[in-house]
View 1 (cartoon, rainbow, N blue to C red):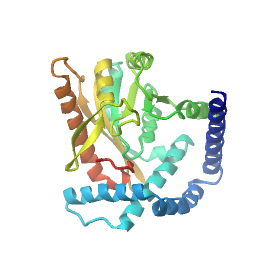
View 2: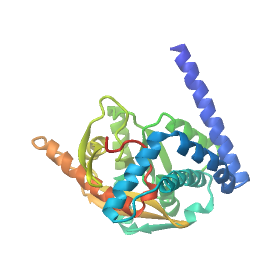
View 3: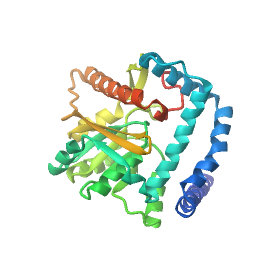
View 4: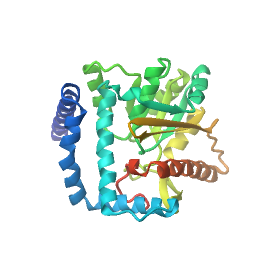
Length: 304
């Protein structure tokens, strides 16, 4: 127990120190310095990570079949990995208070404005597509909006403390949820009751032995999607929207759509209802992934 605690402390110190350094480089030198430094990293990752290479090519292959475009090459795979690195730099820009948030195009903005006017919160279903951190621009444009993003990483609390230490003003908070406990559910219910938004990435099954999922069609093949986000939505009994933030040239485009006024999972046909909601989400995700294929950041065997 003592050794585990010491190792956790070392990892936390390393994480904080590394993030401090990256923030300093971004603010003092500029994003170009990090972009240049990432080039050899991306190349090394491309050469050594066979799973990422094959997963990228499989995904781009599925996209080419549906969009009717040319079969992807290894150069396309490299471009895909490079796009992920560029998104990482943009994330730093969001937290470093750069002017990146000035270049945001928000489609269907009125949907969230109407939800804000109702003074009741909602769930935003996102994905590992594009850059969810760009959603911070929503709270910058409207101070009434408080956004809570659920993540499956133990670094969430450390990152929140780091933002406070660096005096980054934000109405966005990361909440770590390796499992949906009663305490977490109560906390999120309070958020919704206070008119806050809860964002959850609903495309990736958490690495857990008891993570429940369902197979639905996605890009012409069956893939596993988690049940958790939709069970959470049914518990919170609030409106649900889909929200995808993808890059378009030098701008970011936020697309928001109403998913459901309320997710209902009746006891008698709970499995069928879950299948319906997850299939609908997968169809919307597919539509957005086809528009921005190089911003799909799931580099593992998604269909396995």
